[in-house]
Each structure stands twice: as C-alpha cells, then as structure tokens.
Image: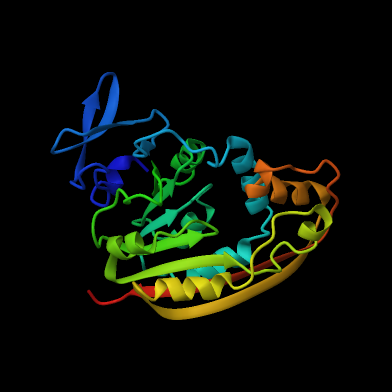
Length: 272
C-alpha cells in the first residue's frame, strides 16, 4: 500500500496536524500545514521517529528469523485467536509490528482494509511496506505521542510489544477495540529451560488489566497453550527472532517440544 491510503489516519509528530504528500528533491515527502516535512523512503515507508533508531530496534536478521518462524505456522493459533476479535474492523494499527504478520492476518479478506504497521525499526518498516498492499509502514516510537489522528481507528493491536495505553485510547474510536497479547510464564518452556533464555515474569496479564482500567473497559480474556515438536533450525530461529538475540543465540540449539502460551485480552475505550 502506498502511504496515501493511510493519510486520513496519520498526523504530524511535531504538531499533530494532518499530512499530505508533496514532492521533495527527487522523491516524495509527507508535509503538514506548518511545513514540517518527512521523506518517504524509496521502499515505501515513512520515518516519523524524529531521532536515531534505538539500540534495541529489531535487526534485519531478527526479522528474517521471525519470518521463518511465522511461515512454519508455530504462532498461527495466536493469529487466529486475534483475528476473531477484529472481524469487521477495517482500520487497524499494530504497534511493535515487526513483520506485520498479525496485522495482515487481522485484516482478513477485507480488500478495503487499511493497516498501519508501526515499529521503531527501519528494517521492520522496509519489510512491512512490501508485505501486503493494504499495509502502510511507519517508523515511530510507541512511547511518544503516536503520529495518528484522534479517534480514527477501529482497532489497535499489540502482540508482545510495549503498551502506551493513554495513546491507544486517544487514537481509538469510541467503539474501537484494543487487543493485547502477552506471554504466560510457561511460554517457550523447554527451549527456555535448555538454553537459559530470559524469563517471563508471572502475572503479566493481570498487571495489564490493572493498568488498562484507567482508560479501558475489559471485554474478553482468553488463554492459549499449545505444545509442538520443533526441529533444531526452528528452535534456533525462535531464539534469534526475539530479545534473546541481543544477548546470545546458542550454537548448540536442539529440537524438542516447545510451548506457545499466551493470554489475549480485549478492551474498549471508556466513555470520554
């Protein structure tokens, strides 16, 4: 999708006004009424980060590993569960989108759907920009004011990603939905035990529910636990696709049983 398709949803990160496409040098840019300008990369994404990419941004190697993991179907039950909550919601933002796998699955077969893949990683934006014609890719930081207009989205999707709940409430329509997926403590059990991976703290879903209560009303909470046999290559990719990659990807990864265990929570904004 070209950036133009999402223009009604995007906002200038400096002043919050609307954006329009304008020529810039030999290329194109997004420009607001106050003349703030942001170049559109030749790959099709726009960088609205307004600063350097942080050191914990996903790398191209991490995203390649994640693409292979998603192609294996390992997280397909998670994607299916998410999609059931977003049927009939054509304007969707995924924050921390990475490969935008869950965003595309959430758009389903709706040819008129508009997805915004927002990630702090330029490598992720390059990947998302060519993934699906319905997806517009934006580089931005979820912890800052989102470059999204007020109350314009049907859904915000957050899968294993940071959560700026106040901003999510601002950009959602009154009847919108926030869908958040968090890992259970047993997520990736087996692999974690064998290789000393980062632990998942207990109570993440409960902590989210408490934090969200300031802005949202809970609608649904569903747990999912699946165990699957994986080979050594897939197990290695599971380690390499996430934050463990910033520490160390073991050289002696073996296959075996791997647990996918998540909680999916659905919220709607509280009345303003």
